[in-house]
Length: 418
Image (cartoon, rainbow, N blue to C red; front, side):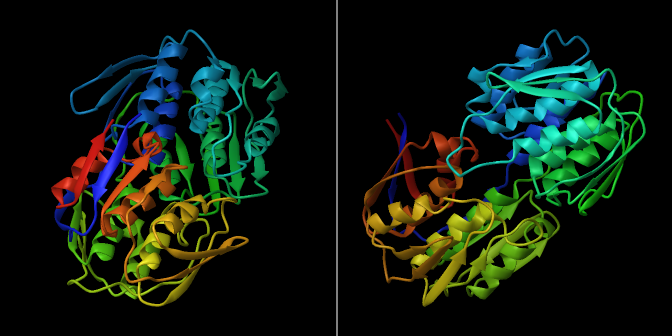
C-alpha cells in the first residue's frame, strides 16, 4: 500500500491549479443517465471515486469515452441494466446518486445500500421518503433498494434534515416527473447549484438552487449537453491553509473566491493576507505564525465540515487556544488522535475539539482514517520537525488529485513511497 513521506519545515511558495470538484462531478455523472443524447463533461478531477463511478455507469450500459485530459463523453441512450451492485457501491456512498435518475428515466432502480463510511450515519431514508412522495413504490430488501414507478409525479417534500445527496437525488428524479416538485429544507451547497445548472443545460426547468426551497417543473425528456464541472472549493481551501501554516505564499488558480467566503474569513482572522481576483485566490502569511481561530461547522453557507480537520491542523501550531465545534458529522475528530502523536495539544469533549497551539509538531508515523482527516495529517507533516510517514493514503486519493505533485511544486518535500 502506498504511503506519503513528508520532510517538514519548508515554507510553501508558488502557484497551484484547483482541480474540478469531486462532489459536483459525481452527481453530474449520475445525471447523464437522464439524457437521451451524449453529454460531454470537462474539468473532471482524476480521482478514485470518479473511476468507480465510471465503472458503475459502464455496468449499467452507459457508453463512456475518456480523452487524455479526463474529458468524459457519456451516452446513456442504451442503458441495459438498472442494478447498482454492492461491490461497486460499497467503496463509495455517492453511488446512491444513480437511484433517482434510473427510476425517473427507466421506471425502475435496484441500488445496493452503501456500506459505512467512517464519518458517521448518512440519511438514505430521506431519499426513499422523497421518492415515495413522488409516487414510487420503494422497498428495501437484502441490502438493496428496489424502486419502481411508471412515471414519477411532482410533489412538495420537506426534508427533515439537510442532506446534499438527498437534495441531488430528488432534484434529478423530479426533472423528468409529471408536474411540479418543491423540495423544502434543501441543501444550499454550491455543488447542488452546479448540478442544477447542468440539468438546466439539458433542458430541465429548475429554479431556487442555492436556496432552501428548490422548484422543479418536470419535462418530457432531457437532451445531451457539454458542461465544465466547477472548481473544488475544499481542495482550494486545503492549499490555502497549507500556505498559512507554513508561513508561505500560495496562489490557487482556476478557482472561485465566492465558493469559500467562510474559509477566507477564518484565514484572515488567523492573520493571513488574502487577496482574490477573477479565477484566483492568494494567501500570503509573510513568514508569520498563524493565530488560533474558533470554528463551528454547519451546512452551507456556514463553515464547511470538510475544512474542519485542516483548521484543527492550523490551530495545533497557532498562537493561542481555539475551539472547533463539529455539528454536521459525528466521530469526525479521528484525525485529532493521530495529530496528538505528533505533539498536538488537542482535547476532545463530545463534538468539540479544544486546540492549544504548540510551537512545533514532531514527525511520527500516522494513519489516515477518512478523506479530510488525511489531508490534515499532510498539513501537519508539512510543519513537523523530521520525516512524517502517512499510511492508508488511499483515503487521500479519493478526494485529492495528485496531492504530492501539487505540494512538491510549491516547495514541499513530499513523495509517495511503497
